[in-house]
Image (tube, rainbow, N blue to C red; front, side, top):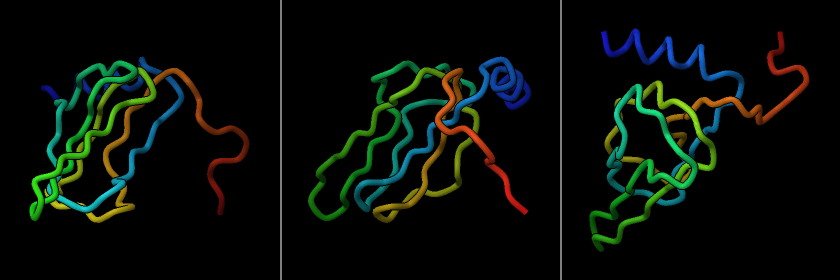
Length: 98
């Protein structure tokens, strides 16, 4: 049931999807649940360095719906994280190619 409502919210939200990438390596801690509405500036993830306990927090640059979560708990720098989909388009033109 929760998954269905999340997909419905995505279709209502619109066009743009903000993709997040890990700026550092570490243990990934999610700060939102699937289906949550995310606001600009809201913390999305913490990445904790297991050697130093230093925490890096990533915040959202868009308002939208958190609709999917990857089944990973440790990320490397540059790894793609979970997107937020909202009404603002991030890219235009031909987005799919053959």
